[in-house]
Image (cartoon, rainbow, N blue to C red):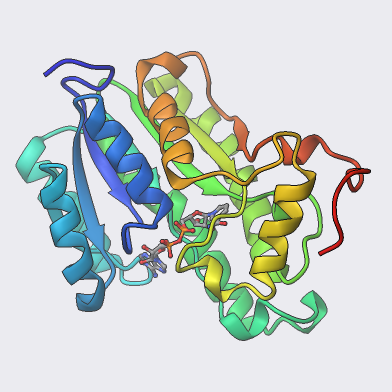
Length: 264
Ligand code: NAD
């Protein structure tokens, strides 16, 4: 095969359906000759992930729920058995109770705080530990974050706190794994209507607000974020680590509502 990813193999975690950001990244990697392994969270998603994996000639690794350590270990064991080593790992996983992605952050429960942090933040470290063993010649780890880590966004609440911790984890992991030539970066994607996003209150309003106020005057697509993921998984970004890179039509540089923005 030819392309930026020729000869490279890796895992993409977090495909739920064809609107998933993880799927955008998997397609972009495949388009450049890379070989992708996909996991699914439970049998309901298996039915969606299997045909998608077939579309890109990928490996269906198996069930992976980051709250179930055995399932995570089994997936990495399967990958080691099939491939021996990997070159990239994409982490596109997040979860919080829908009831707390609306209203006030101050009302967050301890239980959902812990669950959100475990699934949306710690899981990156958990998979990085396992990926390190499969990356003897170095590699690239990429996660997905959101601007709600930096600034308060309506309804993002505990997920914003988890993303802030995730972004800090990216920096700590980059330092720990740098000597092993493993790079760790995050893509801060603008809002996209995915399954996970449908849990966030007033999401349509957030999309419109971004469309009217981002410098490029539009939102971003999964395919566009996929291309940024490709850049991070490929050697094009070989000098970049510990970075949080915004793929958001420039929204993060804006300080106030655009003067020409219509009312929503
Ligand atoms: P999605 O619903 O398609 O993907 C979320 C994935 O997380 C699913 O595949 C789901 O199975 C997985 N997941 C949840 N809990 C899990 C668990 N316990 N174990 C294993 N997997 C689990 O939605 P998406 O928007 O593509 O989300 C992917 C990533 O992108 C998330 O980290 C999300 O926070 C981030 N992100 C999304 C947006 C957006 O607007 N959609 C913007 C910025 C960042």
